[in-house]
Image 1 (cartoon, rainbow, N blue to C red):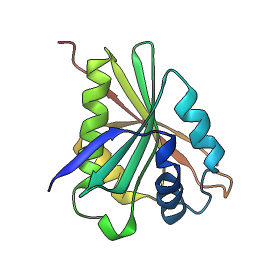
Image 2 (image 1 turned 45 degrees about the vertical axis):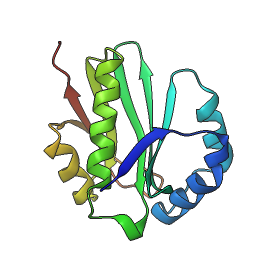
Image 3 (image 1 turned 180 degrees about the vertical axis):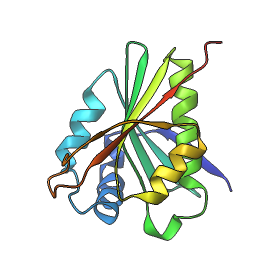
Image 4 (image 1 turned 90 degrees about the horizontal axis):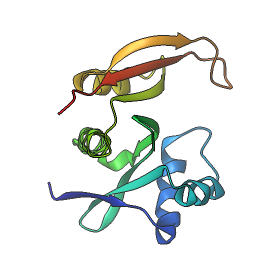
Length: 148
């Protein structure tokens, strides 16, 4: 698969919006992506297959920590390794930036995402009870990166 993960720009807003709306019950507004693209510590990267956006990830690199805020794969491209490649990209970017720790939050009921993160070495740090607007718990996961 010739999947490329590259930094997003304002020109990608339409595709980011489509990915967001096709992946989440409560999608971010387009303005949220504009704000993320303007933050010096925020990264929004797009996964492209044959030039078409099939996924994105949004993460922050602050001091020695990376924090995954959001990851989405278009429904037509799920179960094809896109999310796996994007998580590997995140970890490579975090290491390159000197991060010692990567964190994320995931819905307790999102077993496929939890399994994906566990395959990459993440473990559960703690649970935030009733975190999401619908009352579902958030599982906070962490991965310590080895010093090189």
